[in-house]
Image (tube, rainbow over all chains, first blue to last red; front, side, top):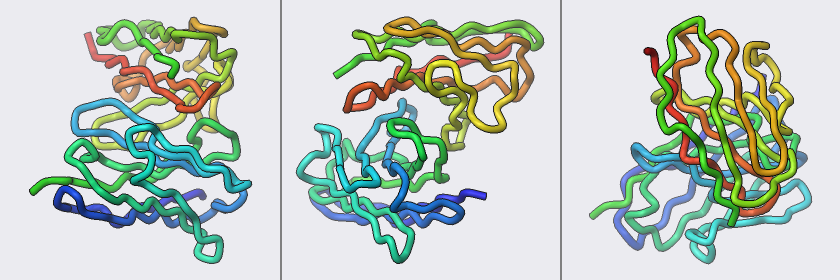
Length: 117
Length: 107
């Protein structure tokens, strides 16, 4: 059974940094497409970042230059380093993975990030 | 950026009836279109990809159709667990984009 478990969310002041983690089991992070998708309170879904198995990364314009997606193959874990956080980054962040590019076949339960003073 | 527009925003249907949800792209996405279901407090669940292929474990009452810019998700006979929010998503070009969602509610 595939499981993706996010951690690292919490309350952070504007301008601060957080690192989200997504530990995978039953699924190999390094050989699949991995994603971060977020959902602001009461709003729809937004793609944040993509990491392809070959190492290619993409970012939404709203986070480019501030967020970095990466993986640790030895830990089978995906990360999202978030710097210079803004109130608009407040959302539940979901980790996703798929053997197919562009869509998230598997989802974690999400971790809430709240940016507020 | 490709804009995906879903209609209607809210759809009221009785259990046992059929529901058809629409999704339109601002430009062609070929068949690189997925549908997700989200219930309150839960992560989205993949229903359909490639516009018409059901994901593993998805009941046969869910079907997808369309190509280019026009897509439809049909639920043939609504069960109580189907009342949720549904999102379409294109993955033809980055940035991948979701529609704003259709809330399917009990009539």
